[in-house]
Amino acid sequence: MIAAFRVRSFRFQFPADLLTSWAAEMENLILAWYVLVNTGSVLMLTLFGSLQFLGTLAAPFFGVLNDRFGSRTMLFVLRGTYAVLAVTVMTLALTDLLAPPLVLMVAAVNGLVRPNDLVMRNSLIGETIPPEHLMSALGLSRSTMDSARVAGALAGAGLSAALGIGLAYVFVTVFYLASIALTLGVARARPVPDPSRTGGAPARVARPSGWREVVDGLAYVWRTPRVLAAMYLAFLVNLTAYPVSGGLMPYVAKSIYLTDATGLGWLVASFSFGALLGSIALVVMGSPRNPERVMVLNIALWYALLFVFAHVRTFAVAMPLLMVTGLVQSLAMIAMAASLLQAAGDRFRARVMGVRTLAVYGLPLGLMAAGALVERLGYPVAISLYCTLGLLFTVLIGVRWRASVWEPAPAREAGSAT
Image (cartoon, rainbow, N blue to C red; front, side, top):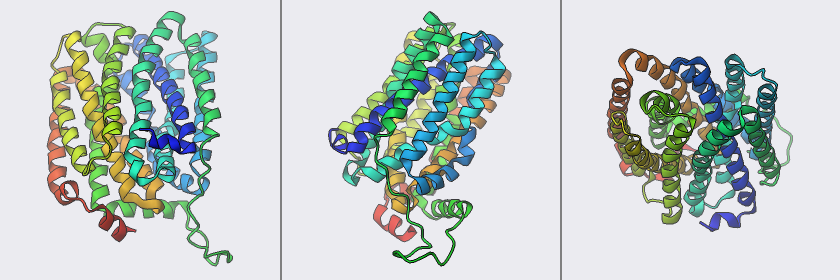
């Protein structure tokens, strides 16, 4: 746990990531509740959630930009954008000009950049942390998001209820500004060398275009079974699992458990507290010998728990169930990130993580489809269908790529692929 903090860059990155995650979680909860209350539509709620992931389509290009300009520069630009948007919402709310269409517009702009923050975080960890401490550093980094979903959810709900959106957003803005200041302290990593240059000689051939580099990254993913299986699983959980445990939670709180924003905060915090426990467990226990196996088994268990959650009608039962669900989700996602970073190597690290973020595009698709299915079939049937399909495809992916999942050869695969 302490080893990662021996790296100076990580001592700045950790609090910067923590403040960014807390601010993001606070504003997501505040605005999601605002949209649901002011429109009364689960479709509008899922549209709000979907708009926040528009940037996933551009994630591979952000990976290329990360290679060219470095993680610190990219994180500074992204977090500056969050701060500007937070100031905009704060000003509109304080002047009573905020309206659901404006919230959706802000969500769309935020969605163009926010999904790529995780690409830069993980790439920076891969650049600065020794391989033997990679899993612990990833667990600590993941804990910033998990703790934000606990404290941020409760703080966002409490501040919004007590102070109103405008004053609550003052805290969000301050958090973003502090994260920008801390981001300036992380390592200025050297960009990936230009392959068209050798030594100090002038370039004879133009550097490959950004599009060419994106294509190379996609080709690397396609020809590396260990990476490809993880990408399919990443898309699957974003399509069928995260909509249930994330985007639909305001609807569940309001329509299933008949609670208010504070109750929503407790539901979100329960899931996130379990995820935080999972992150801490991996930090303490260290890297598993087979992260791929940990990933697949915990994804399957995640679906099973969500299936049970879809049929629970007691708030007091739902909270501990969500906590256990969050724990297995955390184990699965940290194992996935570790597997990808180990397989990618220095040359393709940012691009592989960019493609990984591209898989998040399954989330807006799954959210929109879930909203329509819930209104047509009802919540229990729609979620049961999602969980059944998710579990079935998890088993199929595990069987199809069983050699890479159950008996991986990281060194051989990484070496042959690069």
